[in-house]
Length: 70
Image 1 (cartoon, rainbow, N blue to C red):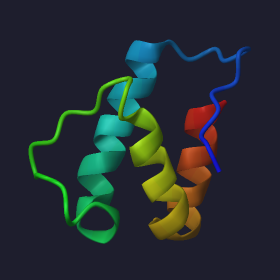
Image 2 (cartoon, rainbow, N blue to C red; image 1 turned 60 degrees about the vertical axis):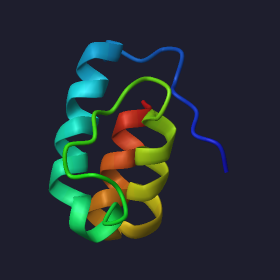
Image 3 (spheres, one colour; image 1 turned 30 degrees about the vertical axis):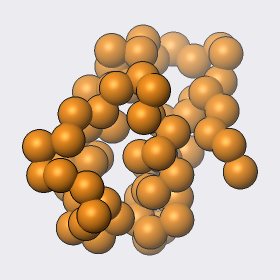
Image 4 (cartoon, helix red, strand yellow; image 1 turned 180 degrees about the horizontal axis):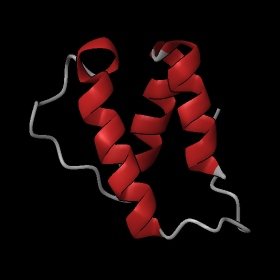
């Protein structure tokens, strides 16, 4: 299922990218073990990280992914 960011979001893209970068570091071993340690999240690869959190991040990762789409 494609990731959709809410058009009524109160979070700026800069804030969203910052939070997703933090999530990447926190969940790297669990969800993103195949990606480089120093990976930089951009607007283009944001859906990849959010999808990974949903699929392999457990309940906490799923909730975080949901918040990042608001």
